[in-house]
Amino acid sequence: MALHKSMFDEFGLGTIWVRRAPQPDEPAALAEPVTPDRSTAIPLNRAAAAELARTASSVPGHESTDALSALDAVLSAAQKNQGVVREAPMARSEPPESPTFDDIPWLDDIPAEARTEPETIDETANDIASLDWDVLAGRVSVCERCKLCERRTNAVFGVGDRDADWMLIGEAPGENEDKLGEPFVGQAGKLLDSMLHSVALSREDNVFIANVIKCRPPGNRNPEVDEVARCEPYLKRQVALVKPKLIVALGRFAAQSLLKTEASIASLRGRVHDYEGVPVIVTYHPAYLLRSLPDKAKAWADLCLAQATYRESLKVADGA
Ligand code: SF4
Image (cartoon, rainbow, N blue to C red):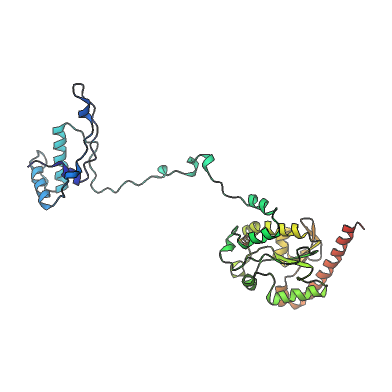
């Protein structure tokens, strides 16, 4: 029985024909690769495989009865008869070759002009530094500059008089602040309001209150260095817009972040520091004072120093 070439196609062997070198005395058309005719393909069933094996056993040197071995033997014999050379032995169960690392277009291979550089902190910081109040507040409410955006309920922008002489800066929103979108609510907020009233200040009239970090860190953990760095442009812009004559840093973290120091709050209290050209007084966080009543007296002393510093700054502003 003559083997139909569609049987080779059925085994996926139809595409392995290669162009051989044209012979000097034959027309060029004979050197064209053979294209399998799949329109006449037939499925290989058991009977066909058995027939194939029988045919193969007649090929000198190939007595295997395995259908695929037989097919290889028959194919080799047919190729010899037709004067066609196979490129390489057929792999029977090799998976398709997967790309190697060198096949993957790494970033280095992409032309420099086609690359999109990631946005840097400084580029957006420059942009933030020119925003007005409303745009700044809107930007904070949808900010995704750090991972704290993922679990916040509300970004806490700040509250109070945007033309205040006093600016109070805390650490980061807690659970209640995150829910309400306002800084210093709950018991700590009430204590802060009482302290402010004692020196004729209030968040409704003449104080602006903000945090170093605008979104709540999960579990009230300390903000990370990267989160502080990414959020800082908002605070800087708030300070630039408010133009306060005095800043009060509430708590160790706020003081250390503003003053770029790791010094203890005990060593920072009782002195006048500087942030962006504005005098800074450091005192305890109201939440700490709720747990440590004896330190309320120290906080009162800090407020007195703040008042004195504020008066001094007024004198300087008046040129006295
Ligand atoms: S914490 Fe600050 S930087 Fe991070 S997402 Fe909130 S507003 Fe943006």
